[in-house]
Image (tube, rainbow, N blue to C red; front, side):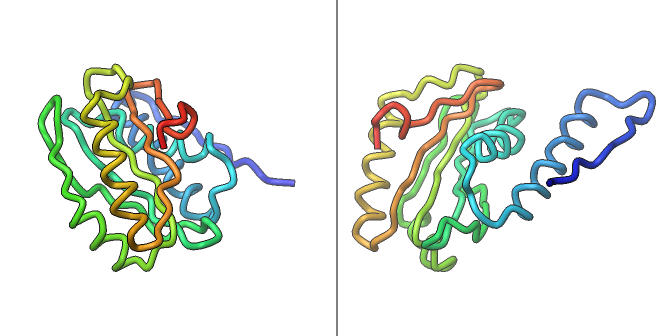
Length: 157
């Protein structure tokens, strides 16, 4: 039986304080879990990491062959409506971590999580590049505020 921790809120916490607190709790849970067995855990973690960013951020979750979490990195920072992503840098990060699989994600600061044509093209390009080094792209998630779109769920991977 898992034990749930209790927390006591301090008076006069700002919304940002609460979000940062929630982010740190989710991050601790994510790191403790070791394995990704629950898609909602990934969604919650990525939402906490990316939903409040004011510009586009591209991130990656690095996994071993059993989908154990090796790490999480924010790789690229862009503007309010785009981020340049370089497959070469993604590959370097994956190889340095000795990852066997990855989940990529980015945010849409506008709050609209619908993938653009450029998002779909980038996903295809990254999937193909990762395939050449025998690394599986499990999903690409787009975080738009409280909503998240999964490329895998939509059959786009």
